[in-house]
Length: 296
Image 1 (cartoon, rainbow, N blue to C red):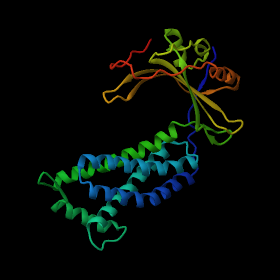
Image 2: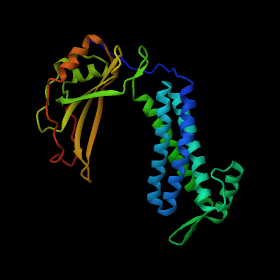
Image 3: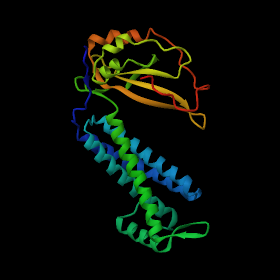
Image 4: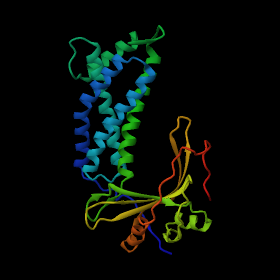
């Protein structure tokens, strides 16, 4: 057996990373919040504004997570905590921009006492309505809570996912931001091979078969690496089944067989050999509506 070591982040981080992330989120949040407030002001449709809220949380979260990676943060708790604070910053800027848009002669950014008074006024009097029904009081508070939850969850999820999903080479000090996906293989159907892969055994990949053209279930091998000489590489293996959604989009049903694992240099040539097995990926145009079942 050729056992691979599962990849896990070291948990280390540079304190400059979270601090830089908060600084960037603070700087980026100002213009983003005003763009968000302008959109909601001119498009006062709650169903559309939900997407605007999610987009606002996503953009400010991405701005912060860029700094987390620049600061080489490999600690999930630090990433999550930073994401929460980024979300709080985003909420502050959003409320300041909202006040500025709706109250004459208000400052570009407000202190917390002014925001509290503004929120209390809106709570009692409302600020918008649906089909003539004024939204205020408890109902308005629920809307505010939902908005806050959307922004906080997205900013935190982005921060954690961006760090967690990208391996880091401790030896050379670089993120493995580059990747190659090999999708020219048939699903691994042998139960013993499936079990071996899930335990970290590389051996089944030496027996993997080519995928037949026009099939919609296949094995995906993902190699993550860096162009920095001497950096580690990682590998992961998934079984993928394609199906077509109601809107015509492609849906991937994914089952992980081998989680992200460190690839020893002795196996580099095996992976390089995968590139010689070329196969044009199947299109989804004729895929069945129902999700395809895995071969095992």
